[in-house]
Image (spheres, one colour):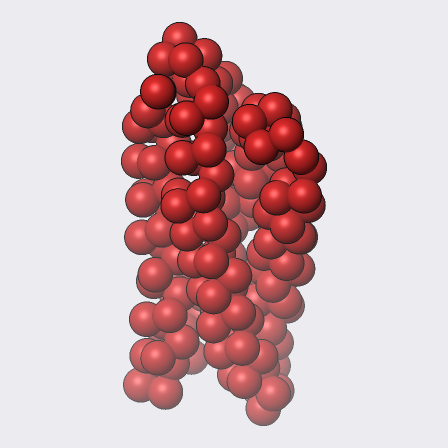
Amino acid sequence: MAELTWLRSRHMELGTEVEALQATAAWMDDATMLELWDRITGHVTFFVNDLVPYISVEDEILYPALTVAAETATPIDVLRAHHAEIERLAADLDEARRALPLGEDHAWRQVRQALYGLYAVARLHFTVEDEIVLPLLEADLEARDAEELEDAVRAVVHNTQSTLDFQEA
């Protein structure tokens, strides 16, 4: 049995950011427009630069290994549906954030809905991966295969982050 330590650690890091979504939604009524704008912009940046690229790496590398371990594509279809919903809600959050300075009354409600929606879907997604997907993979993979899988994910995440850093400069 192998351990996917790096993936579990990465999920914890991403999970910390996901937890912050719920805190922001709860804090909104006490925030100024500028404070909220800054915090929401940070969340949007996290999704665009970190989470969405990471979930695309899961699609590319992690899920093919899961198909072999689970001997079915069904769990992957569910996980990919989570990914699509995360991307949709992240776009909704950005759209609502952009409406805030325009003074649109519904923008605050849309921001809160997107924050809570993102929190719920992303938290569910990581819970399913940590409690079902990774244990399935760990039971199926030899230590060397697990190491190669994590190295592949790490390399693509690093390359994606380097590309994003270059584009922002």
